[in-house]
Amino acid sequence: MITGTVGLTYTGIGVAVFGQQFCLPVPSMLLLMTAGALAEQGHGHLRLSLVVLSGVVGCLAADGFWFWLGRRWGSDVIRLVCSLTSDPRRNRERARQVFARWGLRLLLVAKFVPGLDGVSPPLAGAEGATVKGFVLYDAAGSMLWCAAYVGLGFLFSRQVDAVALLMEHFGRAVVLVVALPLVGFVAWRGLHVVRMIRHLRLRRISPAMLAMKLKENPKVVVFDLLDFEARDGAIAGIPGAMRVDPGRMRAAQRLKIPDGVEIVLYCSSKNEFASARVAEALEKRGFTEVWVLEGGLEGWIAAGHAVTLQLSTPVELAERLGIVLPVELR
Image 1 (cartoon, helix red, strand yellow):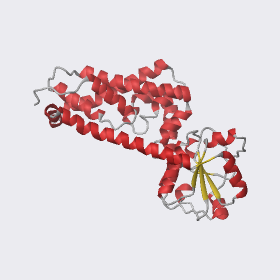
Image 2 (tube, rainbow, N blue to C red):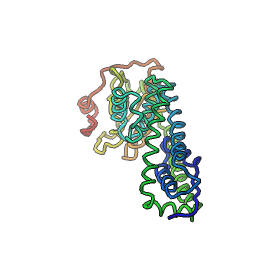
Image 3 (cartoon, rainbow, N blue to C red):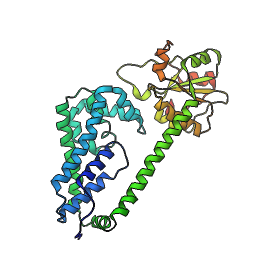
Image 4 (tube, rainbow, N blue to C red):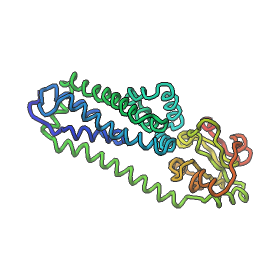
C-alpha cells in the first residue's frame, strides 16, 4: 500500500477533465481512477467527494462553453463538431434523433456514449434548451460519469497501486512522460493544420473562375460535400455537381477519374474545412488537379450564381466524364 503522497491535485483533475472535453488526448479517466484509489488508501489530501466535484466543475466549464457556441451559431457548430468524426452524417443524424427522443435527459448518459459526448452540449444549445435545464442535467450526467471512474479506482485500488506508486516516486518524470507526448501531439496536429491551410491557399478557385470553367471546360467535375449536413428538406447545390459524403470520399480507394479531369470540391463552411480534408486525402492518392471553392456554397450564392435541387448522378458523371465511383459513393 502507498504510504506517501503524490502530486495529484483537485485543480489538476479539473483541468484534465476540461481538456478531455475539448478532444485533447488527456488521460482524465485514468486520473479520476487514480484519485479514487488514493482516497481509498487513506491519503488525507484527496477526498472522494472533492475529486468528483473537481471533475464535475471541469465538465461543466467545457460543456457550458460548447452549449453557448450551440446557442449562438446553431447548426454551424454541430456541423463543425461532426466534421471531425469518421462518419459526420451518421453521427449528426444519430445525435439529432436521440436528442429529439430524450431531450436533455440525454445528458445523463451522453458521456458514456462515444459520438454523443462531444455533440450533445452544442446540440442542446442549438435546440433551444434553457440554461437552467442544461446546467442541471449536465451536472447530473457529469457527476455520474466522474463518480463511475472514481468509484472504479476506489474499488480496484490495489490494481492501480503500481500506477500510484510510480507517480509518488517519479512524479516529475511521469509528468514529463505524459506531458511531452501530449505537447508533441498537439504541436504535430497544429503543424498539420498550418500546412493544410497554406496548401489550401494555393489550391483555391473563386466562384467566378469555377463558373467560367463550367461553361468553357467540359472536363470539370464538382463534388458537393453537403451530404452529411442534410437538414429537414433538400439542400440546393451547384448545377452539375454530385453530392457525396465527405467521410466516405476521404476513405474511397477505388475512385477512378480520368487524366485531365479537374476536381472541384465545396462545402457549406466559409473556411472550407471539410473540403480541405477531402482535398488532402485525394491528393495523397495521386489526384493532382484538385481545387477547393473559395467561400464554399455561401460564396457561390453570394457571387450571384444559380443553385439547383437537381444535382448530377453517378451515371451522368460516368457518361459525361468517364468517372467510376466506388459503391460507397453512389
